[in-house]
Amino acid sequence: MGSNVQDSMLTAQLKEVRKASRQLLHLTDERIAEVLCAVADETIIQAETILSANQADLMKMDASNPKYDRLKLTLDRLQGIADDMRHVAQLPSPVGRVLRETVRPNGLKIKQVSVPFGVIGIIYEARPNVSFDVFSLCLRSHNACVLKGGSDAHITNSAIIRLIHDVLLRFDIDTHVVELLPAEREATSELLHARGLVDLIIPRGSSGLIRFVRDNATVPVIETGAGICHTYFDETGDVTMGAAIINNAKTRRVSVCNALDCVLLNRKRLADLPELCKPLAGSHVIVYADTEAYDSLQGNYPAELLKHATEDSFGTEFLDYKMAIKTVSSLDEAIAWINAVASGHSECIVTQDKEAADKFYNEIDAACVYWNAPTSFSDGAQFGLGAEIGISTQKLHARGPMALEAITTYKWLIEGEGQIRK
Image 1 (tube, rainbow, N blue to C red):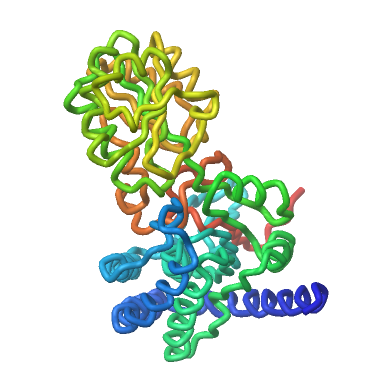
Image 2 (cartoon, helix red, strand yellow):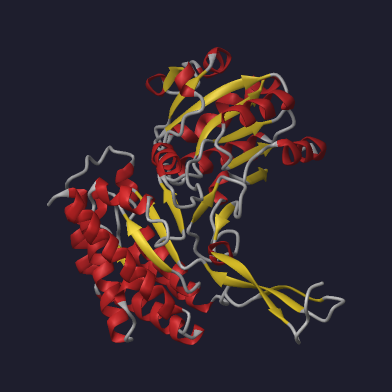
């Protein structure tokens, strides 16, 4: 198929999505909740079909690929996805909220009211759960969505969207309110330049993907996902607490953006490093240590898992059972290092010193800043927001976990009685 023909087909597809988005303005919150619960039910009923499609995708990927875990669906994960959708169905609508209201001296009544963006495009990699998450959040906020998944997960995503479309038809809702674009790269380019048809694009994936979208889109973009996360173990940090926090942040799920990539260790605590790293050995975490940290760990950490750090070891999002360790002389040095190399996602300090924690809170430039808790908590559900559409690492419009309120904008409603401006 020629690129011009394909472009025209995609443009027609996006026009249908724009048209369908207007239908969502008329759906009641109760109807939307019914649809989401029906999709959740159907997900469990058709679990075998979805898992079979997912297995076809998994067979094309090396199991050692860090993306493999993100791609993989299981019955337990599908149950969790269904539960999340039911939870979103019960959340209050973010649309129609009066954000500000005033009466001017001239009698004009002015309201600022939350409204949907309209059409939201999501570009993501091997994460089929995103198809469900984005659909549920967008429908709950009266937004239509255009999904551009990676080729690695296209069979799974197609099965998911067929299921959703079947449920939408049952409720007499235009199926174009959620559309999956072809896996080819040309579709990405079309989406990035669909001004007038798509209101917002949110990329979810690697730093490379996010950078490509940011640099090439003419549609407004919110950057999400890329996480280069640190934990600074301060001179007053508790060793037992620190070991648990580091282990959880690193090994709970290595393929997600809130996973720990680098430990910064106060030089005064080098003797405690073997104890801090001890739990990591059970998960076969490869440690890339600077000279001082290496010397402390040598003979106290499995030799086959201990490596000398290089420049590339730092400022890297590993998405794997790998982690860097850097020794620093002070809290100030740790803060300066993090602000220089991190991605603005999630950063942690382990300390018993409140003044040190307050300084870390105040000076670290990140969406989520932790004191004595692992970065693994950076998640919309963990923050009490329900499911999330991503974690924004920028500062315009939204920052941190993006849930329902973050995928709305607002407009001003002005009511007069014939007033005329002088």
